[in-house]
Length: 295
Image (tube, rainbow, N blue to C red):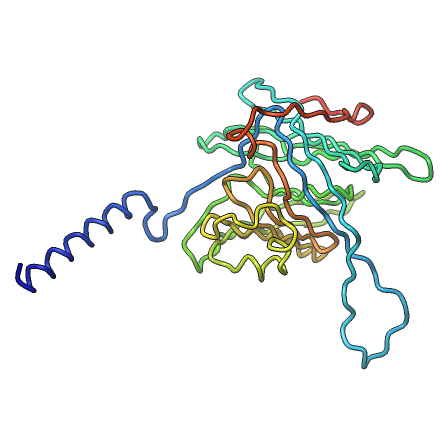
């Protein structure tokens, strides 16, 4: 084979390889969507640390105050019930401290539903939260989304249990680009209305170590998740400066990493990862009977 023929043959093989790759990857600028996939009995554990205010008087020459972080709390999320009703799939997720050191409990109701434009969404609909305050049990409730209506992100405001949840599905765009969506939220207080709009950014191609301050590599049980599968999400609200940064992957049921300023969480375990290696273990979770929310 002459040198010219060899070059042409190599070029044809390379072109064939590129064509094969192009057939399985989205075109430049295209996007794909994903939502976490849950089923009854699925559990996952999140390790959360909380920001502590440093004590003592500081002088100007001491420089910026460094954030101190609490020992980790292990929150166990358990999909205790899945129910299909009137075109909506409801998921009841109950949350408790796996080590039973915190009295905080939560029942979160998520729903998958279709809008009139044919798009399908997974949203956090409502929740109930129980905590112990001076030997008294305090129950609070929230209602954030309704099936059939355009969903909006939900921010953690009523519990130390992290439940920041973006609008699903997440959209993965080209590297270097960010998909920005603004969700109008108005809170009525007496005769006054307050705009509490939430902005959601979805993007890829960021450095997960820098994005998570090294928390994924240091504390997560899924530090080997491929970087090219990660979607970096930011939820922000100008009203009070709230900001939550998360890392999601299609292979995981909950964000690999989440930081809302007052807490940082990493996913350390989920039960579905064991199904291919051993029979599924039965999971037990103490029902949040005083705060249970029926789908």
